[in-house]
Image (tube, rainbow, N blue to C red):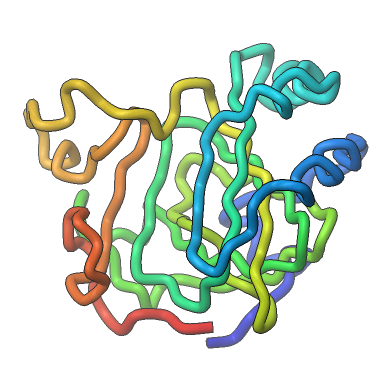
Length: 204
């Protein structure tokens, strides 16, 4: 799969590079978080959320809405699951990493997406990208043989257990697995999410 750069014009469909903010303190903190071979995700970490930059992110990027700051670390070379949220996701690359993304506008139906429509972009260490709410994404991929480390900022309460996820009223409800987290997976992924991804599993 061709790996483009987030500075390429094709990325504008999915998100924007955030400039003019100093994320160095957050990056230094994130370098101390666990980085095992398996992918781990922690949605909210108090230590990060108490940093001064948290208030600036809330004000300048989320319009004063409450946010959560966590991390996603590990070793990953495939994209067989994708998700989206109601609200943008700020990803700050602690290491070089690759994001595999798609557009909800390219979904075949409310619950299916062909992975042939996905694209991959290299995010250099220290770069912050704001993924639009219309962007399908999931855990980043490693840019090399080692692990990736990424800071994840989302609207507060995202990715926590949902008490009503089984109360389906619409077709889209099939994808809702946690609060503000709609997920599609490939039938061969082994993940226990709705099997809405078609085509070949992406490997980078």
